[in-house]
Image 1 (cartoon, rainbow, N blue to C red):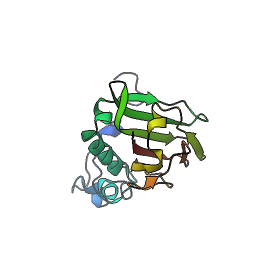
Image 2 (cartoon, rainbow, N blue to C red):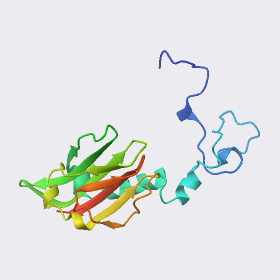
Image 3 (cartoon, helix red, strand yellow):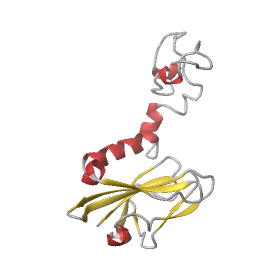
Image 4 (cartoon, rainbow, N blue to C red):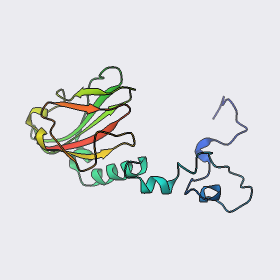
Length: 174
């Protein structure tokens, strides 16, 4: 690495693992460990994320499990939707064989904006063939306020309502 602004400090990604809210974040019992811990370790640590169903850790675990059991997420095609209101978009994964979409489609909707959006999903491939009235919420991010995992949604309006900085992954049969 070259031209770093300050190369005398350790890189943030080489810091101590924040295990819990105990002394030194559970990383070390030393009085003065060489590697310091972040100041917010009491609220942001592995144990707090493990116990929070909407944490980044839980979301990644759910997405990994989904990928392990889905052809669409393993080998499927990807469609990235148009940017909406400069802050939101969709990513669709689907498995196509013999020019036909098969199995379940997965649609991730993400809003990076500071205000809510009604994100259109009608540009996703094969969306008109999908059973949108029985969409299933597969994963949500920590900012999700509109959705719960395993909730059934009716997306027949072909619109996904997303709050500020909210992300959700839904699936539906084709």
